[in-house]
Amino acid sequence: MNPPKSSGSAVPSSRLSRLARFGGMAGGIAGGMIAEGARQLAAGNRPNMAGLLLTPANATRVTQQLATLRGAAMKMGQLLSMDSGEFLPPALAEIMGALRADATPMPPAQLQAVLAQSWGRDWRKQFERFDVRPIAAASIGQVHRARSRDGRDLAIKVQYPGVRDSIDSDVDNVATLIRLSGLVPASLDVAPMLAEAKRQLHEEADYAREGECLAEFGRLLANAPDYRVPGFHADLSGRDVLAMDYVAGTAVEAMADASQETRDRIMALMISLCLRELFDFRLMQTDPNYANYRYDRASDRLVLLDFGATRAFEPDFVAQYRTLLAAGMAGDADAARGAMLAIGFFDTATPAKHQAAIVTMFDTAFAPLRAGGLFDFADNSIAASVRDEGIAIAADRDFWHIPPIDVLFLQRKFGGLFLLGSRLKARVDVAALLAAA
Image (cartoon, rainbow, N blue to C red; front, side, top):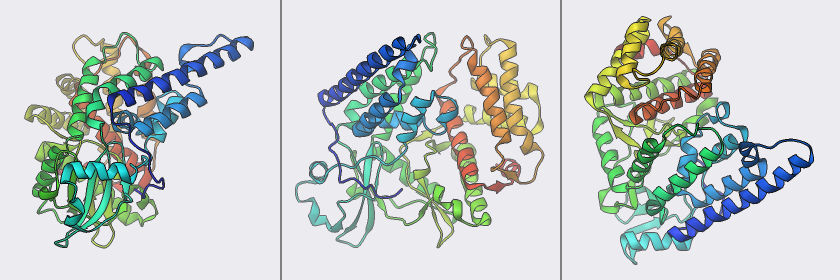
């Protein structure tokens, strides 16, 4: 991630100020809808709610406000943005895609206040150098490079003020935007998913918990020389600040210009890590955001940076996924259907034709892996087929079914890996990696 270019804008930290931002955004959108509706009526067209909401002007207004709010508002946009262009209305996809970019950092005065609250007013005495300009700014916090008095080269994550307290209301407000877009059927109960999103975001905003996960992954991968997990520095860490080793590296998506051999190696390491997280550790960093991974060209190691979205899986869930992957590699549709039912991709009330359609989509994805040899991520024909089958299923709104939240997080991780492989144009023997898992 490149250093943010902006000099910073204050993060609205109180509930009232954030509510005012959402209120102002809603008012601006409503005004835009009225103007656009009048224009369409004058032209003899009959406007619809989704079309009025998702005009280019409103898309720009929403993007700017969510990016200014940061926190859960921006994070919710990022959660929907991995490859939204094929599934969301174009203007909404524009909103979500823009939110993948770096956030605007805090101004120095607000940063000073946050650090003084965490470390005390004389916090600078602990450092030889603390770079006020962040090296990265994301949805929940920003990262600064520093050198402590005892010589430690550090990367320090500092959480934006008010983020934790605003999570629940931010999620509700963004969910309202999604409902108004017409993307989700009104009959679908999204309350459990929203509750889980809030829980997950509260965990991501707890840097003390992330520090524990960082240290745990350091232990789990201590004897894995192909990976580098930054060391955790508990003495400088807490709920709002997280200190770790500064580790140099190149953003993984920027490795698209590397040699084919290097790109293949990166992708193989990513897939191998994901499989170990699921089947060996039963503990996974579930956010596939490319900014969470870097590649150290000097040591040929994959660097892991962010553990806020770490999630533990129950043994039965992992066993069911192992059964599902084995069924996919064997081309056993009946076994795949049974595993999907156990996992929760659908339930016993799902019509047989929809169950069959989901199993067919799964089989389409596994067909090239069963052939063996190198899987070419640059060939998007399989992805296009799976996407088309998925869109056809989703088009029947009477069918819509929300799988268990663990499934959603895991499938999102798998999808993110595929998108990275496609960007890198990697070629990997995925079947061999699955067989070794």
